[in-house]
Image (cartoon, rainbow, N blue to C red; front, side):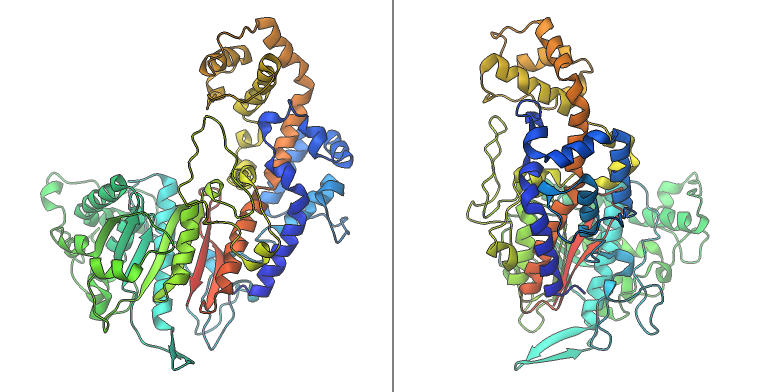
Length: 583
């Protein structure tokens, strides 16, 4: 378990290193040639180092950082500053500040909740040798379902639903109650009754939690299209669920991905698989280990029977999955919302957890604050994304002309920073820095195309020079958009861009376009190096945001434990970290 002092220390080290680099990280590649960013943002020492390195050598550094293998023993300086350090020193410091390097993120396979008997967790002890009597490490789902969603989404839903089920069960076993000011730990076997899925979207996660793990789920989304689609999709999944389970089980047993062919009358026999039949799935085989009492629900409470018993003419799924269309903020009354959808009295008031898969921008912040404000919420599992949509307390988002960027939150509701330590320093990141945090070093390390400068970026930066040359400014109402990927020839790109920008009345010749491209030809290699150097800071920016939220959770007096968990495979899902908190 991460301790508040440890997280605050990591944040201070990160803030000290990032502060002088913030102008560089926030720089816009559109302005690279026009504003001579190479000379403006990089120290002479750093420019000399980068000029001496080849692009493949810098790309190799990116791969080493992503794999966690980068180590530079010759770097002995305690304080590394971006504006006075060598490239080697900067990369070494970045490697030391990564979440994994500082042991502030826990791999999902090593995640454990502490108890009064054994408070060890995650990085606080070696996980190679399990302690006798402890719960087993979380296992990756062994189910091999049909691909009825993208491979990325399937991976996320399978892993996160399994993780949520384990956290919910551990929380129901170790229930902490405050009675007359005295904290005591009980071992009541009460299961987590309701999960609130914030920003449920298409409802894949909600449906899995209902159908596979038998939870009651309240799915919240601000889009009526999403909530309607969630209900419809859940009904479709339910009707085909026994078939999905049969094929998933067969793949698991055979391990070769092949399943038995459907017979001539497979449609009429669908849903009639009997326990013990070859290829069938008995209730004992599919039972989720969530206790055996009747209160655990249909799947957990029945030990025998056919897999088809889970599908009950469409009634039980609709009762267990409720969708609500509303805009979620930190002031939402969750208990009233639960009462409206899963009626209860004060005696039977349900315990609940708050979950969210890729909660976008401010929604991730509001999910955390909802958990802190809802004292009856027992745990939080939140995977955030879209940090560029956050509102910063000490930095205003730039007004990008023509992009019609409208924040979906109140300007007086900051999403960063949340922690007291960063607020005390009036620390900010900036929108471009938060936008860049979406870059994935892991993907860059395995996909060669990701290590190359995207052609649209280069073309757009050159176009910016031409616009200023012709107009004397670059403040245009219209935008080019994602145009560069459609044209391999720069001349064609300029002609199309000129039309989109409504500059047809501004003459530009073929010779001028060719001269521009040739003039900045020598700078294109520096443009590529500048791009790679900025990319190295991406995991630090995301790490800073995640640590800020972790510190905020730990600052709450009633939060028993809080973690950053590396939940997904970062190659498949770059936004792979979950913020987990329990009471």
